[in-house]
Image (tube, rainbow, N blue to C red):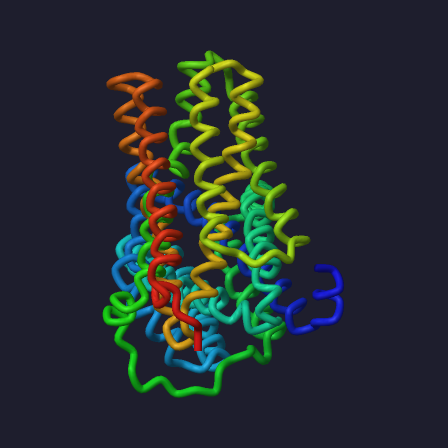
Length: 393
């Protein structure tokens, strides 16, 4: 992986831009939440803020994907970041005038623009290197995103302690300028796509649809565990905030460990890998039933390891099996799976408070077993039907 980065300056600039952009995004999230709370003093306003950030991405996912598929990467990048700069300036003015409805409207539009950038960056990622390096590149990208999730909020908190949020709201402008300067050119396919029927594409490429379904189910029953973790730590394990922080760190350590392994692995990604990761994911749930501190900690590490392994494998398979002209749309729909995490968290919270932790863990286990069974079915279809996995043109 080091040699790949050392000899690939465009990829180095791309990853540096990714690091700056995603760190800026997290700083911006922290600043926006703080600013809204300072203006309204209403926790419900924070919920509305985050809803306005999420909904446009979900509602217009297909449109986002088609835009990414049909527009040249470099032109789209300039357009997106120019809009991001303009909308950020308008947002700062809205905060200055204390126009709350305008603030929410601008945040919604800007969130949609930023989602286009996110999908595009995921689409062009494989074009920086050979196909056999796909897993390493996606793993490196995922590792960078995990790093920004740690350092972004930390930097945001420090900056808020020493300056006003009005000034910090301009940070996305600086990050957009940096990204434009770092990525003056982006790799792209010189092809004009006259036909773009995503519904028909899913009908004829069922493996992609099945992979997406496994991801959604895993998000709902597995990844949503992070939402109920603080309740489990406090009410079941009778531990405090320190141990919650430790468990969260162990979960992140598991994720980073598997990504480091992937970056040094050259084995081709297959559906069998999804089966293996889903089984290991399910095993971590069984271990948690013991409810002993050290076993629970080991189970948390395995969960972080297996869940990140499953998610990265899922992303690699989607890239492998999707034709270039549909990658933007498929990735746009695929990355909606994160929306199932809060929904699953609501269900797990209800099960925990109403029926207890054993019923909650049993439900999670059943859901993840369903993921495993669907992966096994996919492998069976691959052997039975030669057209189930079609070669990418």
